[in-house]
Length: 120
Image (cartoon, rainbow, N blue to C red; front, top):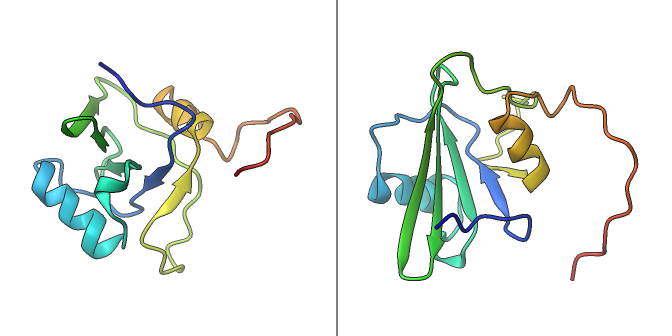
């Protein structure tokens, strides 16, 4: 069952990832390079160099899950990433992830102002 929603936190690994990697290798990137703990329940997004494959690693009830999406045509459109910044992960919200999956660049999307609840 698909257990991701807007109540989850998402972190994008901003460097190309070898899509042959699986649970242990992706967990290693999360721990060693992103400085996060995969068991906290956050979702971690990895995209290959050609922007045609995305994997999301997520700890759910009972263990780790990998969601994998491979595009038949086209590429994922990402926000502009500052490669000069040494950040090992970029925070992404649910709406930005949805735009990326649907082929819309989050940095080019025009959003109408909306009220958002305060984070606790």
